[in-house]
Length: 334
Image (cartoon, rainbow, N blue to C red):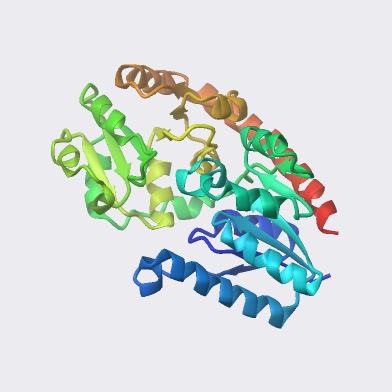
């Protein structure tokens, strides 16, 4: 039976690993930011819809797994299924449930979800929404656990500026950050002002920061790395003692935590019900408060060896969880 996974988003890593685990083809339909279509969103979705339909009718898959958001991707796939007799499954990310722009299209989300052979989501809070909508069948499919080769992590960093900061730092701390609306970099900068013996690396393209004055006034122990390619990002994180990963968006499970655990690093993350539910055995948790964050960073360093051991035990159990979820999902696609 021919199957395909359709993605309209920019990021492919999570979808690629699902596709690999399911042994199905992954197809991305996305227009880069420098294109005219990317600036006119409605035209971009029309173009992506047309190219998706052309591909589907040419290749005639019998089952189509599609990522949501944008909700217009499953709408397009459903149109193909109506005409071809194929079946659709939907993988809905947390943004589809929480982002304001997508909440406006809940009527479409419900419409396509009720016509899907299965709906997956990323955490139990998302699943509660689907159940409240009487969507069935539905299941949680949490992230897989990546594995990185230590030889690659040990390679020198390409940016000598970062090497200088690391060389002069006894306690290097890194914040996983993109300067998105839900990133809590302000709290981290305020914390750095109280911890001058520590060096704080804050990732992300500073051009995307909406408050430039905050960056300009940051203390000298804060290093803004700029955009880092994934390999460089991992090498820097591997060299740091503690990793910070926050979100101001409720009911969100962070993919970055999986990368942190793959490197076996103590981490401090947002104190939320969802993050405690999934990572309570291994994480340090804090509200958006610099004084409390300072305490948690110090505690993470104090308990570093114990935390690393807890992470190893957690991953061993969690890999079995991933296998179970993939096996359950495959039954719907059979």
